[in-house]
Length: 103
Image 1 (cartoon, rainbow, N blue to C red):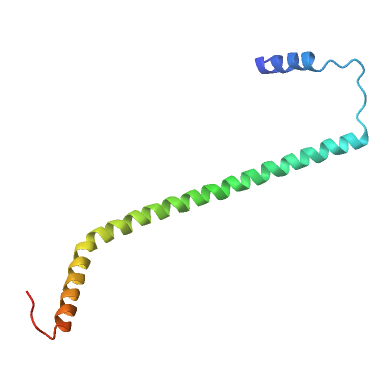
Image 2: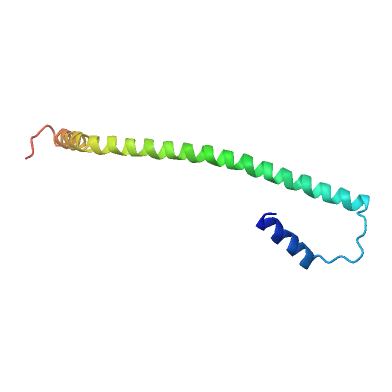
């Protein structure tokens, strides 16, 4: 007999001394079966939720990777965008000044 079975048997003897065992009534049996069914449903829902969570984790990781790629693209483009914005700002300022070249 395994150690677990021995421990389980001993704990049953210690914690459940029954002098006069009564048969289980039909209502009690129905209640036990209802609880077992509810427990089975909870385990099934738990398994389904773990599957959904796993898929969401994969999607989140893909989004983090894509975000990092986009940030890198923006870092590479930032100097060119700043240069264009500066040029456009100077052109607009020059245009407002009536075409005069301000240095």
